Image (cartoon, rainbow, N blue to C red; front, side, top):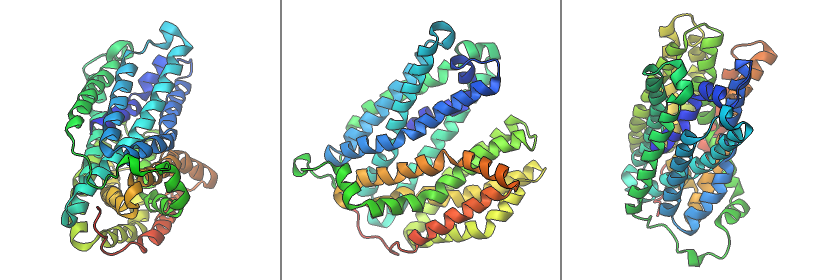
Length: 401
């Protein structure tokens, strides 16, 4: 939760950071520069897959988890202590970009190493439920990443936020994340971890060479989860404010509520998957997306905030299915000695290609076609592709040891 809090707060503070580090006479130019740095963090995730996949498979899941949270926490503290553009000029902006690259590398190793560790140690009869707690924690981190900046802004003036208020969420979260790194020294290593001396080749190279088809299947399997999430929580939030003239606070309110819905629903999905099997639950979510995607998108284009909320709520429930089961299914798909590398490469490649790019793709499709419903057709196409992989999953996965 704390790792994702630290990674998320940048996005919610982007308008302020744009003015602090990329000042311009045109506010939109400053904001665009800040969002470009946000994208850099996502683009760095495949690099993190290589680094932490190697660490996780060669030296252990525990060292990867300690290193990732310490990198993230240190990065947040450093951002909170950075001099501004007004103080030192361009080096301030350059330092911000460098730190966000480090944080992007860090978060790439965090989610997958944590997932592999807990799924490998989970009892077979409750593996999906245990894995769903990772999605629960990640999504609560996103909620916390919006709540703390919002609270800080509400308790300070605009001038104070620009002067020093923006530093508080970074320093607070970074300090706690560093403490988390110390606590992680007490973690038990996974019993599936092979001794480093037993390896003669890099696990990442081995995964890419021998299991690239499996990695590609992982990417395709996760596309709908990534696309729907960024469509309803990033693209749609901006659309509600810019095109439908809801206030920013209204858009943030319904987004926050639905993030909490996804987090809670993910746990229920995990329990159901242990009873009926992950393949059945994933296929049900895919069919539901095909059947209800267009009506839900229609609701999100109504003038009533209540109807917009219901549309986003429906998408949130469908999206929770993919997030709840993703780490468990990916760990089950990965070869035993290369789990960290394979899962990290599949997961982070998908997020880099289809996550951060979704708002841009949706904007392009609407602008090119003139059809506000073009993004939901993109969702349906992604879902159809994912169903090809879901159909090939075993009804009941073998033991993960």
